Amino acid sequence: MRITMETQVLNIDEPGALDTAARLIHEGEVVGFPTETVYGLAANLFDANAVHKIFQAKGRPADNPLIAHIASPKDLPSLVLDSESQAYHKAVEVASHFWPGPLSVLFPKSDRVPDVVTAGLRTVVVRIPSHPIARRFLAAAGPVAAPSANLSGRPSPTALEHVLHDMRGRIPAIIEGGPCSVGVESTVVDLFRSPPMILRPGGVTLEQLRVYLPEIQVLGAPPARDLAAPTAEQSVPETAPQPDTSPPRKPTAPPTPGLKYTHYSPDAMVVLFEHAPADAHLACLFEYLASLLGVRVPAAPHRCAFTSNTHSAAAPNAASQTARAKHASTEREIRSSDVRIGLCLTASSPAVIPAALRDHPRVAVTSLGPDLAAVQRALFDALRQCDAAALPLVVVEGVPRAGEGLAIMNRLGKAAAQTATVRMAIDR
Image (cartoon, rainbow, N blue to C red; front, top):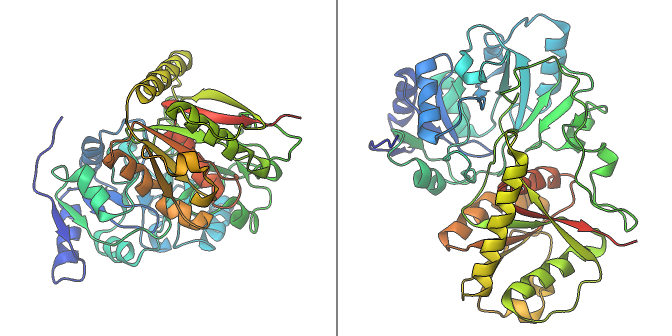
């Protein structure tokens, strides 16, 4: 369904702008607003009809739950079940070290929270953002349900222009707030299971959480000691999911956003090269690019294995076959035409690119930053810029899965879900 309406941009420091944003929420409308992670799309948390408008504006599947955003811990008891329990107080104590900030916590929900917010689950994910404009907005509007303010499946918005690109004509207002300082969504944790679990990596790192929860694990990942780059004696396999010891939940709905569907994907095909020891992944990356462009670079000393990376629970084999076919079709198009290819560098300087590629007119190089925090901030904008340049394929240098790298690689893996993701196999 196509939605058409006038979308106004609100400067919260102008007289009446904050009142306008709060009034729209109270009237059951949807408002875009900035947070430190990404821009969000807010509706009154307790108004099921208003929350439905979020799903309509985004084209979001109804079984993908939303995150509740509140202004203060004082708002939390009205959203959750059994706020006097020991488990509740322990969860709040851990959250207090990161709130306000990019941490979202899973709680048993109260009946006040409509099922549309939680996709029918008995839990609700809650966070308190740290962005000063978000705090003022939430204090005036009250608790809201809010996913990222992008069309479903697209790269998340970290700047006003991203929200306008996706949401103009679909929502009545967007609050201007400048670029987002973190650049990826919040970390989502379940502190009510044993051991505690990171359900979605994000703006709070595993290492930061382990200061207060040494036993915390990451859903679908190996133990923390194996999350960094492997040694030269190790291969880089697909990670096997950890057993889920949480209470039974509806099988059709994930406990938190970002788990079930393809996310963060540009129109361009993303080919991700996993980080490997001694920068072995770079040699394979350059060799792959050279093969597409018909130029010569030094041969990679290690093998490079391509695998499809899909997130289709319904028909994974069919989705994998479709991804491989799309990958092959895109490669044929590149080899037989003069289209440009994107190259996104993360940890490396453009100086490491072989001259045959660095000076090639069909290679569009983007350097995301000097460190992982900068890469994290620039990631979604870079994916959107690739689409703006109409690049059919983007090759991305992976980073170690430690610190901010865990969230970065999670997002890149999701972005490449409908494409072919590269995994490095290191020769013994």
